[in-house]
Image 1 (spheres, rainbow, N blue to C red):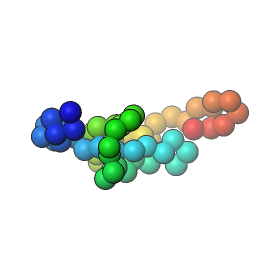
Image 2 (image 1 turned 45 degrees about the vertical axis):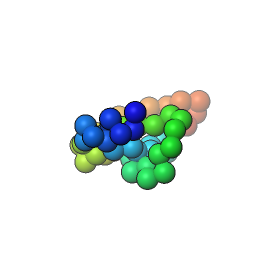
Image 3 (image 1 turned 90 degrees about the vertical axis):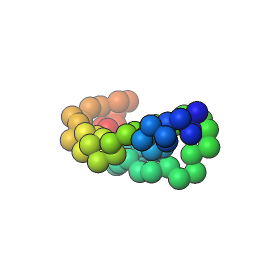
Length: 59
């Protein structure tokens, strides 16, 4: 599956909701992964998304 996604221009990434950052996941080896085609656009989108509260924490 990873070869198909990579071949279509997607990159495996990880997301940190506390800092609202996306980074390349060079050790992508299974589990829950994010596959993103336009990393710059996605980074801009998560950094400018509205803040909301979950269990007393703002994310």
